[in-house]
Amino acid sequence: IAGITQAPTSQILAAGRRMTLRCTQDMRHNAMYWYRQDLGLGLRLIHYSNTAGTTGKGEVPDGYSVSRANTDDFPLTLASAVPSQTSVYFCASSDLAGGPGELFFGEGSRLTVL
Amino acid sequence: GQNIDQPTEMTATEGAIVQINCTYQTSGFNGLFWYQQHAGEAPTFLSYNVLDGLEEKGRFSSFLSRSKGYSYLLLKELQMKDSASYLCAVRDSNYQLIWGAGTKLIIKP
Image 1 (tube, chains in turn yellow, blue):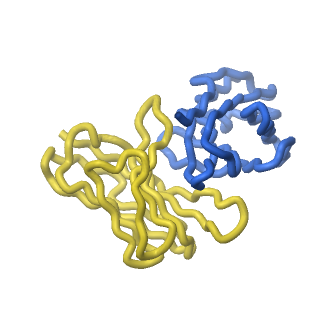
Image 2: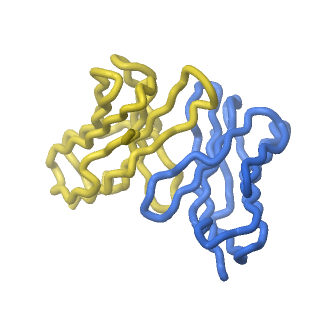
């Protein structure tokens, strides 16, 4: 079982370019999340989805969009990248149906915008 | 506003015990989580507290006091592999997780 897979693991991108970070999970979790992690700051929620077909805005949604066409996939798109979007991006999933609903994280995507 | 406070960095000796504190002010409370994150890796789940008291899991224990808005993570018999950042997170009334900035734990031989 792979858990959560993110791609790419690392990318250097020119400002103004469009970029999609892919995230796939095989745990059949209903909820999925995109976070960014910057030095000295806690994980900040960008967008989330509590179930397939629905999405919501997190703490820092500007400049990002997501879709949740099915249970397994939750891509994050930067329509026109800016240097302030240089960060490490983590996709995560959780099962909200029972238990504590802890998050399972992908390995992260390190994005540099020049 | 909502806030999670934890020390930025702590240092401890191999074989010793260390306590990492977390205080929080959130809109409601639906559980507190501790995660471990090694450098360059993803966070991994350590513990969950929703009721007051101590939860023990091997060398790691986590304590919660909801009335004080306080939790701690206790690590016993420290090993070099415990060198990592420890993240405290609280689930608020909207079931969103509020994250602390993390405590970097350095273990010295």
